[in-house]
Length: 104
Image (cartoon, rainbow, N blue to C red; front, side, top):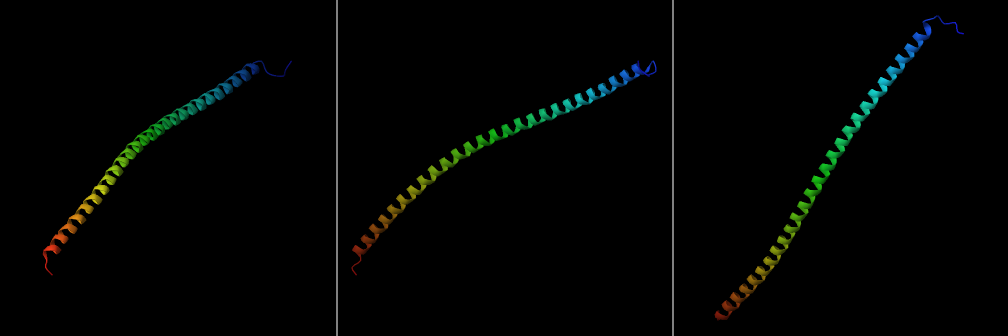
């Protein structure tokens, strides 16, 4: 058979089992660590998606406000032109009345 002393096989098997147990424990710890990192990455991804969604909502709201401001601005510009035209017409009328009264 072999040249091993009688308890040697049991010691070798015990040593092999202990080494395999340590490797298994290390693998399980690595797996657990990887799972925690993945879970944290998923939470970060969810948070980022939530922030992007909030930014999209803000962007839509700001775009609506800008559209409303542009409409009001154009309306004010149009009203301003109309008032300026009426003032010019009134000034012209006043000048022609004053010129008609002036016997120069």
